[in-house]
Image 1: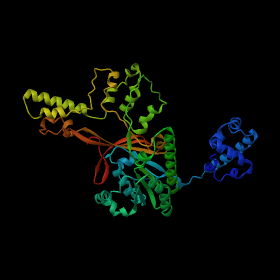
Image 2: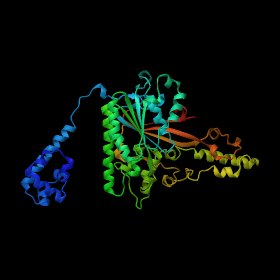
Image 3: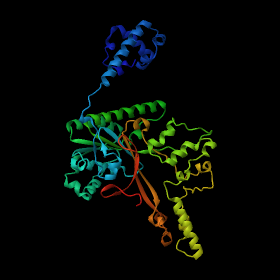
Image 4: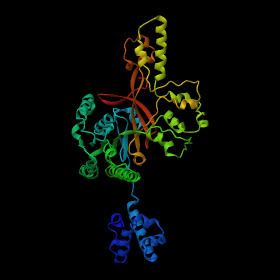
Length: 462
C-alpha cells in the first residue's frame, strides 16, 4: 500500500492492529486512493479481510486526510502586503493595456515564435523593476534564470546606454542575479532549492523572477510515450506552477516566464462533426490568442456543409484581416497592365512572378462561404507549450507575434516608381503585443518595434 508515501507520518502505520491489513494491501497493490473511494464491501472482497476491520481502517484514514486537508487550506487573514501591485514596463501604452504593468503575486507568461521579441521584453523588465517608486518601478533587484544559454549582457548594456534615465537612477546589471540551467534536473534544483533560499536571504530586495524559457527542457526530457506519461507530466507541471505561485505570494514577487510554441495542425475528419461550444477544441483559440478568422475556420472546417454555407454578415473580413496580400496582388496587376499598355520595362516578369506568395490565395466574393472555408490563406496553428494545466495557473498571458504587411510604397500606390527586383521590398515587418487574457485588463493588441531602447509601442499606421 502506498500509505507510506502518501502519509509517511501517519499513526496508522504504527498500529499493530492494522499491520496485517497493510501487508495485504501491499501484496494486492491496493492504493490509498482506492481505500478512500471504494466501498468497504468491495475492498473486503479484493483483500479477503474482515469488513469490520476494513470499515474501521477506512474511517480513520478518511478522518486523517480531512484533517490534513483542513490544515493545508486554512483561511488566512488578508493584509496590504498581499495586495498585488504593478511595476512599469517603461512603455506607457503597454502599461495602460496591462492595467498598470507587471503585477506581483502572480505568474505572467510571454509566448511567441522565435525572434518575436520575448527575450527583449524580459530584459527590459529586469531593468525597469530597478527604477524608483516615483517612476513606476520597485527599486528592487531581479533574478534572471536562463535555459537556452547565458544572459545577453551586451544587449542589456545597449539598453542602459540608450536610456539615460535608467543609469541616472542607479539601474545596473549588478542588480540582476542570473543563472543558467543546462538540463531539467538542474532547472528543478534551481527552482526548488536555490531560488527559495535566495529569496529568503534577500527578503524584500528581490521583486522580479524571470525564467527564459520555462518549457525548453521539459519539451525535450519529459517522456510522452503513453497516457500514463501524459498524466505524470500534467502532475509535474501542476506541481511546478503551484510552487512558483507559492514563492510569488510568500515573497511578494512577480514571476514572468517565457514559453515556447508548438504546432497544432488542422486535421480533416472523415465524417462531418459539429463543434460544440463546451469542447476544449472550440475554446482553444481564445486561450492561445488566435485570430477570429482562424477560430472560425477551425470550428467549421469539419462541420456539415449546411453549417459552413452560413457565414457571418461580414465574413469577407475573416479572410482578409491580417495580411495585405490582396493589396499587393492588385497593385502588381495594375502596374503590370500599365506596363503592357505603355510597353514599359520598369518591372520585370521575374519580379511579378515572385511577388505573389504561393501559400496565400486571394478570396473572391463569387464563391459561397463553404467554398472559401477551404481557401483560407493562413491558419493560426501555434500554441504555447505545457497545455491547459499550465494555463490555469496564469494571471496574464501575452503573445508576441511577428508578421508582414504591405510596405508604404504599396499602400501609397507607388509601385510603378520601383525599379528594383527584390520582392521583399513589397513587405514590412509588423510586430504585435497581444494581451490574450489577464486578471487585470481586457484583451488588446498593440503594435510595437524593437529598438536600442528595447520594445516600444508605435502607431498601427507606421
